[in-house]
Image (tube, rainbow, N blue to C red; front, top):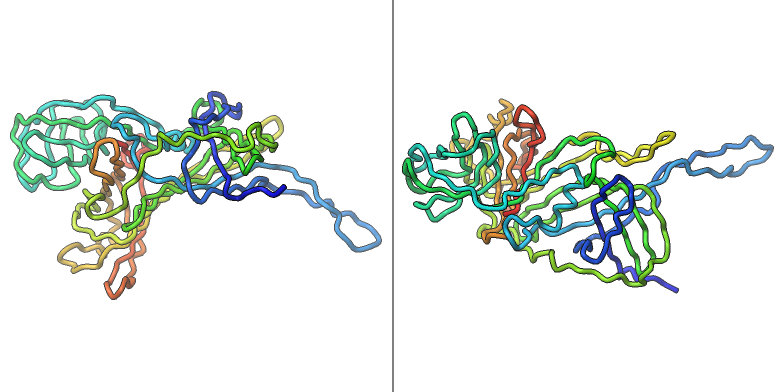
Length: 391
């Protein structure tokens, strides 16, 4: 009997113990596109017989794992401070999840002058505890993205200048949110850092255990923003599914909004707010390694080299001198916010990026400047190259 390529489904659930089947169920269905599987990866050893005639000797497989890839849409959970459906995928890709369940409120303790990008807050005892979050002031209608916070001075740096002055006692509110930061977990012993994956093709089920992955993001205009995932996992069973066509529940996955001038705002790149962006992407670039030794088999994340690329309209040097920034290896923050309605806002904040490889390109007769970005560790403890905030 032929199988339908249209009838594909993937279920993913974090594991309490590494490579122990977490039994993904209906609620763990992933709403995705571009779903594909490499069901049997790994190497074989040729037998290479010496015989008095030509011909193959055959081979014996000495390792085996599987890979799946797919894309999900970038959207919030529908409710601020509720983890989005893709949050578990980030956890299985060496990200930590931190939830701020209610708004953080206080007052400013110094005047924030119009057209400046700093305010002094009354609360916050840890460096960068608010970085990546949104703040609003009672005196102002707009929200602002925090790209830096220094605990010793309680000074918050904003992604764009204040549109009006903030008084020394102005109330502020930092929105409830869920924020994800990369970590450097290594090894297989930590719970909820790996996932069990069920891939179903019209009744044939492939099980991947101990899966870990990496991802990239595409936030280019006139398109639906996407997360592109690739997971490697240990080989579980390959069988006919207990259900020929498994049920699925996609209700937690929210409808995205397209990347546009109206929807995608608060762009900040090395102190510049005027970039007209045509292409924007990031790649977390985890090094995902299948490893087999006597007595051990695992999928590990052994490193990451996050990077990005951006294409923006070229302009005069007097407006922004990107060439000197590249030549002098200047570093600075990058930030962007997608979405304007609480519950469906996703912000990306990179406190320290370095630009490289500038070159011109053409877009319908408009000169573009293409740049590569390296996302660098920022604080003394690292693990802060990018903050992904659902709010």
